[in-house]
Amino acid sequence: MTENYRDMWTSLGLDLAAHDQLLAVLGELYQQIYLGQKNRPKGMAYFDFVISEVHGLRIKELLDAKAKGRKVIGSFCLYVPEEIILAADGVSVGLCAGAAFGVEEAEKHLPRTTCSLIKSFFGFALTRVCPYMAASDLIVGENTCDGKKKSYEIFKGIVDRLYVMDMPQMKSESGRALLRGEYGRFVEKLESVTGRRITAESLKKGIRTVNAKRRAMHRLAKLRAADPAPISGLDALLANQVFFYDDPERFTGSVNQICDELEERVKRGQGVFPKKTARLLVSGCPMAIPNWKLHHIVEASGAVIVGEESCVGERGMQNLVDERGENMDSLLDRITDRYFRIDCAIFTPNPSRAEHAAAMARELKADGVIHYALPFCAPYQIEASPLEQSLEKQGIPVLRIDTDYSPEDTEQIRTRVEAFIERIRG
Ligand code: BJ8
Image (cartoon, rainbow, N blue to C red; front, side):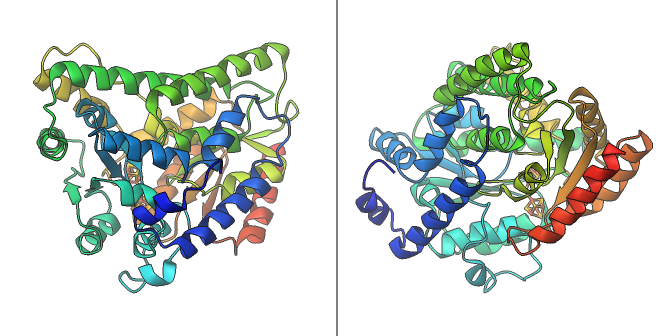
């Protein structure tokens, strides 16, 4: 960290001792997992800097924005449209949910049989170590899985300023109408929190900004189809994770710069791993910072991850919002159209996810798919079986890994991943 931010963290009400512990663990993990990689693109220096300042400079930027009258809107899910937040001149941030921190505290409120992601955001809030949560003027929850929707009932007693968006469960006309209605309600909520009126013009601008960000990520995703892979799965995952925290324009510029470099690498046939390294696609639950466990195990075992069918990955990036609407109603319709296509496992039925995973595996020339689920995540654990059957039928080998944020099962997973790599190498 380039500056001393202790006064800033104190002003946010963080528990400095616990926060120091968290930063020490994060720093060590990053050093060990990321900085030891070989042949990294030079452009990754930007992301190294972002991570080194993830609780420093970025938080200072948020507080500077707040001082100028902007509001910070924190959320946990892809269904919360950043386009609408930007249209209200808000700053959108993904909230901390990727580390096992404060688990004991979380389990005083939640059953042990709750997924790590939910326990994580409870733990971060209860131990007061998340500056993003502390800086948020509004925290947006969503009625997605049962775990989240029931836990928000308790969470609203832990953080004030929680707002919960309702969510459909079926891709029906009434489901779409529900989502459209919720986005209208979100506009009103944001207008009241920010004191700014959202106009067709500001919404169009928000749409253009987020589309540009997604376009840059599509460009990066496509470059991963090259053999040898020009970027590691770990580095690409990091870019997907930072997507949710960074200033949107700066992020887009940095990703496009990396893509320029990767295009040159592809032309020269240069990669991070040798040509014909086993290529894997990961499909399943989101991986928030600092959940780098599976990618690290796979890439240390001699395979490369070439894509993520995940919310922190292609599920979050696919499809842009049509920019052609002329008034608030038509623009909100187009936003709804785009978000309603996200194939999260909370929807029933959800056939497009398996189709999307198969299409990604083909496009990225993956030799196999690792299905990743957090224990106690019913939507993804249950969907794993039909997804596996469908992919195997198409000749795409699948390995199912259910694992939480703790490092305890690392060796077991490594053994299974190594055996899977052997299988796909034939
Ligand atoms: S759009 S995946 S971010 S809901 S892991 S809390 S599903 S029990 S995170 Fe998600 Fe939105 Fe869907 Fe994406 Fe529940 Fe499963 Fe836990 Fe999960």
